[in-house]
Structure formats: C-alpha cells, structure tokens
Image (cartoon, rainbow over all chains, first blue to last red; front, side):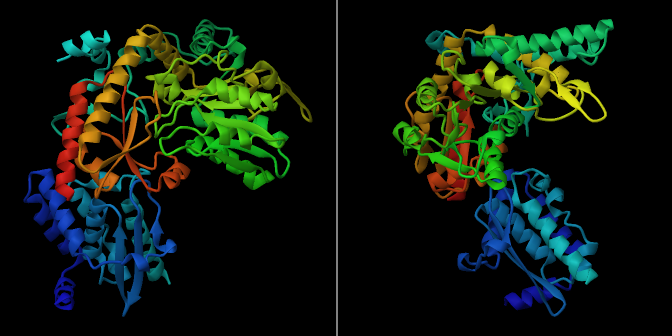
Length: 149
Length: 414
C-alpha cells in the first residue's frame, strides 16, 4: 500500500507536491487546525526508530532535536528522519513527503518553499532554535553533493 | 484590574506598562504577553528617547576629538561609566570597563586575567548551573592550556551546594566563577559567602550578574566581588553593551584584551605601550550610543521603588508557581528559597518547543530550549525546558493568560 502511494506520489513533481500540500493546509484558518494537520503528518511518517538514531544523523538545533538519514537508492534519495518535538516532526514529514523518492538533481532544482507558503516560515529562520532549518540545508547540500559527484 | 495588585504591593503596574511602548502591540491579533525577559527585557521610553536624543544632538566619536561634539559624546560615555559605578556601588569609575556585552566581559577576564596564570592542571571552579558565557571561555583555557574545570554541584531544588563548592577550592584554583542568579532556575546565590570562601584560600571570585542585576540590588563592595559582570539589554537597556567591574589591583595587572585604537599609550615601529585601565581594555570605537542607553536604563531603575518592584515580581512568581503546581503534569525546575522571578518547567508529554510554538499563536512569548546551559540540562536530566521569566511590567492577568494557554496546549498535544 505504502509503496503504491509513493509510486503515485512520485509521478508528481516536487513543485506539484508542495502545491497540493499547501492547499491542504490553507483550507484551515485556525492555527490549531494547521498544527493538528502537522501532527497527523508526523504520526503518519515512516518512523526512524530510536534504536537506529545515530549521533552522526543529529542535526544541530537548540530547542528540538532532529535526526536525519539520507540514502541514494536506484538514483533516488530516500530520507528518513525524526524529531523529539511534534511540530518539528510534522515539518520534517512534509519535507520527506516532498523530497523523498526524487533524484538529487530534482531536489537541487526545487527549493523547499512549502513551510513559507503555509505560514510556518519562521521555523526556517536562521535562529538557534530549530533543527528543521538545518535539516533542510543538510538534505539540499547532500543532494548537491550527489549531483556534483 | 491592577487596583488590587497596587494595593497589595504598592506598585502601579499599569502606569509602568505605559513606559514601555512595545507592550501595547499585538501579535497575531492577540495581546502580547512577553515572558521572555530573562533572554532580553523590553525598553522603556526613557531609554529609547535618551538614545535617539543623543544621536540627534550630541553624537560623535569619543576620547579623540577636541571639537564640541566629541567632547559632548565623551561626557555622555563617561557618564555611563559613572552610572555603572553607582549601580554596582563600585569604589571608582576606573573600576568599570564597558564591553560590547556580557559575553565579551567573560572572555576578557579569561583572556587577560586568568589565561596568563594557567599552567596545565590549574583549576577554575564554576557551578552546574552556569550559562555558557561562564563556561565556554574556561573550556578555551582547558583546550589551549590544560586548565581543569571543577563543577560545584546543585541540589535538586536548585540550591548551590556550598559545602561541595568549598571542597573544590584548593591550591590549584585560579578563579571561582559563579552565577549570582541562575538564568534557568532563578536561584540567587549567597555571593558574600562564596567570596569569603574563595578569599579564605586566596582565590579571586567572579560573579555572573546578568540576571541578578535586574532582579536584585547589587553592591560589589558588600559582596566583596573581585569581578562582576552584567549586560545592558537585560536591565531594560540596549544590546551591544556590557559592564565588567574589577578591583583596581587586578585591572592594573591584567594584560590588554584586544589591540587597536584607544587602548594604547604609544605605538612605534617595534614597540608598543598601553594605556591605563579602563581604557586599556576598550580597544577601538566603543559602543557609544549603547552606553547612553545603558546610563538611561540605570537611571530608570534608580527612579523606581526597588522594594515595590521586587514585591511585585515575587507576587508574579508566586502566582505562576501556584498555578503551574496545580496544573496536571507540570514539573518546575528550581525551587530555591528566595529565588528570582524565573520559572523553568516541563509539561509531561509535551515538548517545550511544541508548547512554545503553540502558545506563541496566543500572543504568549516564552523561551523553550536549553537556555545556553547544556550542563544544567544534563544535570536536570532533560534536553530542554520551557521558561517563563518575569519583568516589572508583567501582570497577574498575563500569568493567567500564560497558564490558560499552557493548559490548552497540553490538551492539544495529549
């Protein structure tokens, strides 16, 4: 089932995915509803179990901890990630949904604009607070590295 | 709303709030409830006006020019040094170094005073509840010179273990550097007792007064501090300026910190000599307008009834503590008797980052994170906490808004 969904999703471009997700969020006027949707996304995300979280996967951040694992499988990036904070985990779930399964070239060409579109751009500000911004940077840097290899 | 409060504490918080323009703004269409004062306090009109007026009428570089404005600006700058002297009850204005912030002051002491004394194995005694600004400069000395950092324990209530502290001060101790008030736990430490303990072994003592300067009355002579540090922006003044007090015999023995203009006596092709303290430690153009703002903030604090403000802040703390204790699943970190108006807490099942994010949408600004105190977080067994910190302009109603928002957030995440 999961495989089927991913296959379907990957027929969409990164831009199309971000657009579709933005629409899902912008339906809600109430912030708590948007956060609820983020929490649902976090819960639905394929887990990165605690036992598999290594220190080298840890992304620096002040308030919440983030772990990320990026693998290249058949030329496509497979991303698994987790956070101890739910809202951060929800944002990560969006990032994984948008990028995972795409080629490094596609990822490099398509910036992650969704957080700003849905009014959560503050989570990407270069503050010490959030591991999420660093995670976006790390994934895009990894994609760029793979493209240049 | 504030009548009862005024009656109880003799402090008119509504009038005080009118002095702080930013407090009337809204965030996300909600009234701002600013409870992140330990990170940085908001600025009263007196500070804003003093800085603007200075820039509009008296600004120039200091200590250099013979012209009218330079001499006016120098007067302002030196008046700030004098204000800081008064604020700390230091013996002389020459004991006061104006820095670019609290952090720079710690680094200055580490580099100019402690570093030249350190041989491998020499020790610096700090506590488990220090801010990174009072940890990392000592780590530099550990990495570069083989210094050893000794950590005085705190109890589960956040009280500094004085017996343990005393046991750590030995023949190799070069400095005891302890917070005067914890930025997480609110614990106020018995500075005079600590100073006597260090001095009994011939060891100088430094206090981190960044939080204490705004919540307690500081008298560096009464506590016999050798070094005392605070910063402008936590006492309702501007960012970019800090104050280092040091006893004169230490200052005159300390090597320069940064090299540049202003701090020299003579510069030749193959020789240089340095100016006297405090100018020796103030290389380059100093934070001039920030000094003017600092002086205004100090005058502002001198103009208020300190006892009434203290009673008001303690009433806010007690009210918040009572309500958080009554709330389900809330754990408070730091219950030292007489603590200052800061509450660090944890809500069971809710990450502090999630909590802070959600209540932000209700206009409530709190801090979530490690509060630049990793070792303390490890000691407490957490990676992060929430923190509400109060200022003289906060109200009981704001405490209620905060607690109600916290309750709703708890229900949302559970």
